[in-house]
Length: 424
Image (cartoon, rainbow, N blue to C red; front, side, top):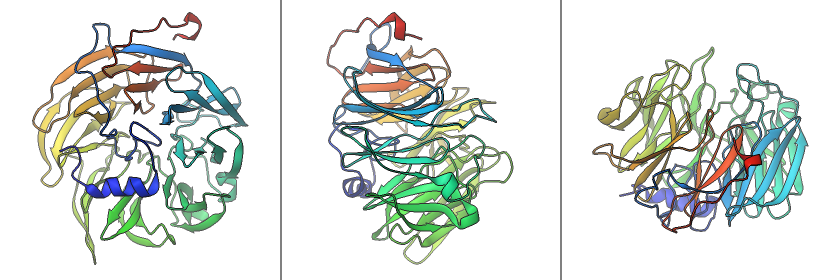
């Protein structure tokens, strides 16, 4: 059973409409790491790894691409400009380009490019730059429709690594992890048409976690992880429906997205924070457990599979990191691959695609019974933090040097010969 929650499918239909094979937002069509049911992957790869469809240079930043109707949106930085580019997904041809100035300089990390994945919705593209520049662009032309300088508007500091949370759309509102704690604007709702402030709530700094939409007790709830809380927000008015302490002060980061499993919520972070498992009932919420075991993930969001959670336990920067599958209700580890290395995950066609930060792509069976590897290939040559995207059998992966499009379906297409000028 690929999903145990029909509610997730309902949420997608009402919030981010997409066609089979689209990947219009962070972590895919359902915002949970699962690809569309129509995706079909080859059972094995050629001896040299997946065939390369095309590749091109990319600037700085860790933002993965979003894909809609055979158009891939790349968000990166070159010199002193943040650049949004629309590319034909099957060829890499540039359809349009939008540029805006940026002066952010990395402090704790040398990265100075955007981290938040673009969001595509109803012929518009929403991007959230590393210095808080929130923009709405026309999907067909790249023309700017509106923009907000959220750091200036809500008195937000730069944070450890700049902005890293992808906005969420519920009905007619763009919900953003802004971090304007001085103005009770930790979370802000903007109108989709003009970018007007509709409401603001919570005196919290921002995190690097992206919010999700959950259907709980008969209504839609926006689940946010801020700097210090896991909160359920009423998207209509910003009322805080429930909140739990989550995170620590000091040099820590909340990076993984919350995960809904039925009426339960899971959250995870490293830095001594650990995992959290709670339950949301009609008239009450409760914390069931909180512990560093079995999962304390620095920024990888685990994937729910048949009631279990599969993801990375550990950190990229200091290690070790293991791949682990566990039952969140009991905390029982079902299987684990020790010293696996850090990675981000996609589930498609009952297979796991794991993009490791050392540039290795791995394919394995999606199972809570065992880990079975099906393929492994070195596809990038430098540190790879950007989330991969899968659309109609094409996998988009990038580091800070290049964006590559790999063929993972059964099309039988032969590899292209890459242009030497665009290779790593």
